[in-house]
Length: 88
Image: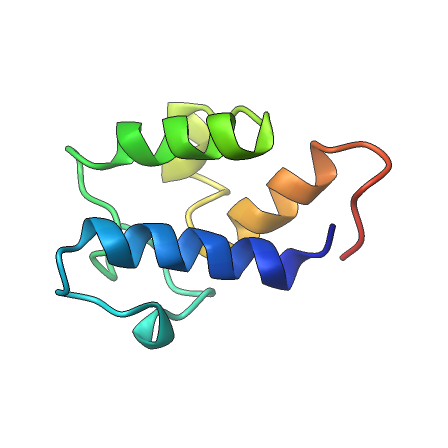
């Protein structure tokens, strides 16, 4: 698994949850998901559950507000959490 397809899936998910406020094409994978408005305090739990159910990888609350606060960082974490499939 490579990072770019994971980023696309994350963008598509967040765009769908935004109720047409954002499109996946508008999202910058290197932007902070909080300050860019991709995730808010109500939606982030659903986003973390989506990641875990889709990829079998857990992201902690602390990580998503810290070092994993961009879609690219999340995608790298997801790829690294799937042994034998990671490829940056």
